[in-house]
Length: 335
Image: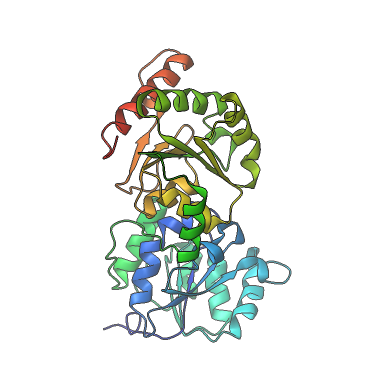
């Protein structure tokens, strides 16, 4: 057994990509690393935009979440690496996994006195690692998840879970059950938020889809989004004269929103964190990838990429997308 695979007790994992989806994608890796420690727990260092502290509060293998924003004067750039190292030193970690290619996290680990340093090792980062098992420059072009897979594989840690699985708290589930109505045979969650305008499918498209769902299945509709999505939720609900079969789950604490998604029979939505969360809680999902390609190959997410639909007009793309969604819903148990 190499020094990299000897089980340690105080282990830090750095995953600095900012999105909620980024955290969800890395759950199998975080769990695998935790299972390789003495305590079966890790500390996670990430960005506060990920909402990891709240999102992972029911996840037993996460001991603590630290945010990069806690570092005084910031952790960006080379000097930021030294500042981050000073911040981490008092925690006395004995192992670090850097699931990112930046050299500054290697600098920080060295400055913090972390003896066992594992990472991608592509480029300058390699100079600050202790693991001899690093990735080649040819592997620099791998996608986010494949890089993490390769890093763990090289260092003798097996990823046992084939898809992300998010653990919810009892409190979050109770709150979601109070919000959703239980007198409907089926419930459809719509992830209406988007981190970028280009990824937003749009109010009118969601309205058209809701009309089709109601015509075919009479389902309860749950609008799920963040604090910035009140406007789109209001526009959708007002179009139908604010019926009682539309429930708003907008602006909720992230774990309550996750629980609401978990109680739906299906979740449909933009390429956003809630879509990934829904699948990670076991809900069959349909993703609308109008400005991106899927990064997460979760088998519970069926991707729809309108740009690949062979048509000559935007109107046809919207109509065909709606038909594909309705046809896909018909394959889900209960519909």
